[in-house]
Length: 237
Image 1 (cartoon, rainbow, N blue to C red):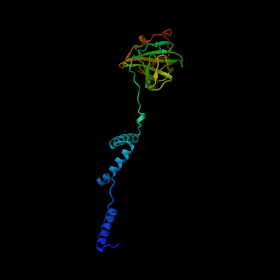
Image 2: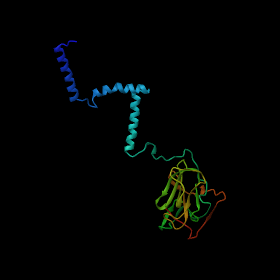
Image 3: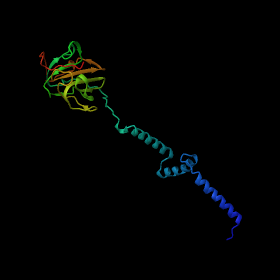
């Protein structure tokens, strides 16, 4: 086969020019030309998988948001959530089976700090280690050391009603745990602002302390009045 010399030289020059500009100016990854070239490939791959390009982009955005949370040290499935009660359970149980009412609700001389102060609960003197029971069904809102309360448990009973248990020697529940009326939630002690082993017990409605005694149906449990100076008293106030 014979080649026309002029035609051959022209073609060779054009090929060399294309090769030069291709090597000298590579396409940028974020250029519109590159995006146009990649678009058919993405569409073809999505079609093979039976997924639209738009839904693939949405999935990528969702994953990217999760990666951002991981960068911030937050696992999407590890956010702290505290269960809340949908219904209401009214406290109706003495939290310790045998105890002495060593300090009542209302104004009193503070046994530790001195002076007249409002006592927002009652003190039930009992031996160290006596089990403390939930006075109604509920969810544990707090189970930890809490200032003058010492080792402390707070239960949410729904309807803005809660109970508080202070000065424990040991806590037997964890935050977020659901408990039933009568379940052991801790043990009597003398932690925090206390003169001796007892339970400081409160009932609160909408955040305000009320007298717990009307909420204590003993059902055979014994709660005795006591004026003995040796019986445990205290006060987080």
